[in-house]
Length: 182
Image (tube, rainbow, N blue to C red; front, side):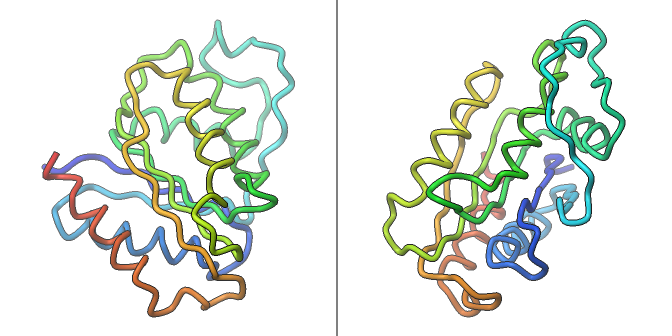
């Protein structure tokens, strides 16, 4: 049996370029027998963390919205993959909000070990992903059993479909295929 993988597309735009990267990663992971769940934050209600810290005792957030079910899935996955568009050289706001809401996992016996970041941006410069990577590394540092296993950036894509035919799609598929080789 392959690893249990959760792929989260954080773009709110349907058929986004970052969602295409996520789909390619999923295809590769499925080819090698991984159990893959893919979800999108599009259409989800995810409120901001209130900082009450009740979740540190109860392992559940007091806010009743879609984040609770997503956080539960995050905690049970062996591998996490976050796909985000780069906005102002950082991860999407909805991704950051979800990461904040994952606070109930901090004191829990979470399963994830390997975390991947897939990102797209209009800017072609490889450094455009640095802010999102730094934010992801900050979140991961709170989960000492996990690590940032890989980052894939595809720049120069703005409009829906700009990524079609881009070599980054194959790189994402290969990243997914490599999961069961580790």
